[in-house]
Amino acid sequence: MDSFVIRGGRSLHGTVEISGAKNAALPIFCVSLLAEGVHFFRNVPRLNDIDTIVELVRYLGAEVEGEAPVLRVATDRLHRFDAPYEHVKKMRASVLALGPLLARFGEARVSLPGGCAIGARPIDQHLKGFEALGAQVTIEHGYVVAKAQRLRGAEIVFDLPTVGGTENIMMAAALADGRTTLLNCAREPEVEELARVLNKMGANVVGAGTDTIHIEGVREMRPVDHAIIPDRIEAGTYMVAAAITGGDVLLHNCRLDHMESVAAKLVQAGASVTAEGQGVRVRAKAPFRACDATTMPYPGFPTDMQAQFMVLMCLAKGESVITETVFENRFMHVPELARMGADIEIRGRAAVVRGVPKLSAATVMCSDLRASAALAIAGLVAEGETRLLRVYHIDRGYEDIVAKLAGLGADVERVRGDA
Ligand code: EPU
Image: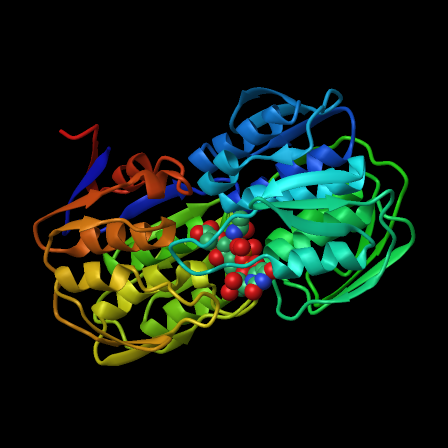
């Protein structure tokens, strides 16, 4: 297994290119299943999670050609309607195939994902939505089996705003008979992006980005050529890295309007964040102010930035309380940060962080994608040589992170295998 070796102490300077958004790209590969023909996706990030979704659509019969950032997906020979356990256990987002397969073929069989490192992550809201659209949903041998001659529009109120649930039902409803109204929807930019793609394909979706979405079903959709929005979480991660190292970094190709809550927290902590051309510039100098943060659905502070921001608070002056409300087990980075000298106490859903003057390098273990990004950031400022193990977690969601950090002046390298 590969690891990263990071020698801390360099501040980051220069420009970094932000890649296409992983969490926008994954549903977009699934949406291609809704229409027969040849799709082109641009600005696709080169990531292990993208390889996994490509494997899945290939398994279903799609032909995928090209290489990130441009992929051609031909969906006229789909011949399977199932997502096997092997795919779904690798990546939960595979459940997003359920809605499109059910809507287009009247049948889908997708493995239940089970829990994951950050929480139980049920998909009850997805299933409730399919049932409301008239599907018969059963659980058989660990699989969700959904069937419907034809889906019909309905009014669905989500119990909580779920990104994947909103996306899955939106895709299914696009080909249903009649009008669907979704209430208490997730408002993430990735949901809005999916609606944009659906509409380019001939669907009729209004209101995405708000908590109420209306979908007028259509009989047929057409293939699409679409460039994916920039990754706001990758961008946020580099923003924290720039700030904590006392750097001056221009993030090229990213959207400040998708990152207001993260930018606001960085400014509160003492960094400067400004829109500049096609990007965002972050400048900072220690000392940082301690500030509290609570994760919330968009436009609140993203759970996907909680771990990274916590590292900044580890070095801030004073005490901050970071509360995680979206996932029940998303503090896996805390014991590893403690091994690097951080002072953090977990109290239920909150982490009380008392700033320390410095972190010290250690060998640490990555547990999930964002926790790993946080440990990499900690390595950038820790005294000495940090070794990050199990970096396959990072490879799922950060394109070329070693090259990008090195390009900004960090002393970081990937060590192959068990070397
Ligand atoms: N939930 C339910 N029932 C459901 C669906 C969700 O109780 O049917 C709960 C979840 O357990 C969680 C909360 O609702 O407590 C929010 O989950 P959501 O469905 O919004 O998350 P997701 O769609 O599974 C996406 C991202 C995650 C990101 C979350 C929250 C993708 C592929 N994944 O997951 O990204 O953390 O939204 O913003 O879009 C990551 O990139 O590292 C990552 C984990």
